[in-house]
Structures are given as C-alpha cells and as structure tokens.
Image (cartoon, rainbow, N blue to C red):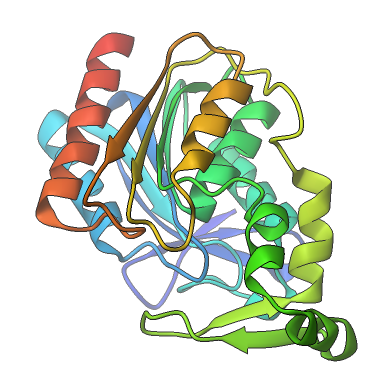
Length: 255
C-alpha cells in the first residue's frame, strides 16, 4: 500500500507495520535503483547525483531507506542484512516495473547482489561502489579485538567511531544474521553485466574484495575499476563522474 508521508518522500507499507520511505522518478527502462550503505540514507550525494542523471536521461529512478535508516520506520539496532535485503526485494517488486540496474554503495553492494539473486529476471545489471559483501564476516572480526567481541556477546552491541557524522553501532544480531547471507564462499549465479568501482585507499573495505567478488560471479561481463587515490566514500566530484560514466555505459549497453 502506498501513501504520502509528512515529508516529500513516499511510503511503502510493509508487514508488521513497518514503512519504507522512498523517492521515485518516472522514466524509461532499464530503471535504476540505488541501495545505500551501512547507517547511510537516501539523501546522500551519490543518490542525488544518480537521480539528477536519470532525470536528464529520462530514465526511471528509485532511492529508498532500509528499515532503521533515514526516514523509514524501525530501530537500526534491530536490523540486519536479512531485513535490509528483504526491503530491497520488496521495493523492487512493488515500486518498479521491468528491468532494473541496481547501484549499491558499500553494504548496498552486498544487498544488491542478494536482491539480484532473489529476482534475477528483474535485474539487468549491477554497479558496486566500494561494494562490501560479507563485511560482517570478513572485515568486522578482523577489526574488532577480543575484548570488543566479548562485549558484543555480553551486551549485544558495541559502538565504534566511524570517522563520519554518526558512530557505527555493531550488534550481535548483525553479525549472527549476516552469516546466513554470505556470498563469497562459492560461485554467485548471476549472468548480468556487473561494474565494480573501488578505491585503493579504502580503509574500510579492502579493494581486493572487488576482485574476489569478480571471481565469484558467474557472469563473464564483469569489470573492476580500481581508483588509486580513492577512499571508501568515493564521493569526490571525479568519483561521482566515474560512477555516472559507468552507469551511462551500462544503460547504453542494455538499451
């Protein structure tokens, strides 16, 4: 069921009284759906740049907040990859029509692959920006010391400085549920074109993850672009232009 919220965002009502806030732009297909990162929301620079680009091209576009993020309902600490990937699939099913290109930033790069596996006939292509598949298993445990891991077990969560506006909240449920959605342990059965952009100065997600994801994808049409000076955010003007070039090339290819 769709309704208006008090802001200019629209609301997709989900089960258990949950609500997903979104902005949707009409246009031609393939449409573009942006998937945000961990503790991010749909008002960031990448999302808005993609929206402006799609508007100029006449391309359909959608951006949204997962539960516990931004303007959507729910508590962040109750969320995990399973819930957020379900949100992405619900958005894909109920708010888009026809083929879609998913653009995932950081954690959104993990979620875009999970959504594509759930709806392979709807997903025409993927673009990962500093994609972070399996980060709860292959990154967090290496960053956390024994004392922090013990605190998570005892208290259910810890708070880590992020270097951004808000500190990171790492919960036991995030790590435990993440293990049910790991991707890099075997082949990833997707044959759509995939573009991966990763900064080599990324201090959060090693750039080698992009190469590992490339090797796991069954598709033969997977390209990795490594940016020597790029950090995790990849939000400088040149980075945004690089993302838009990748999207434009993929949309032209699919059209």
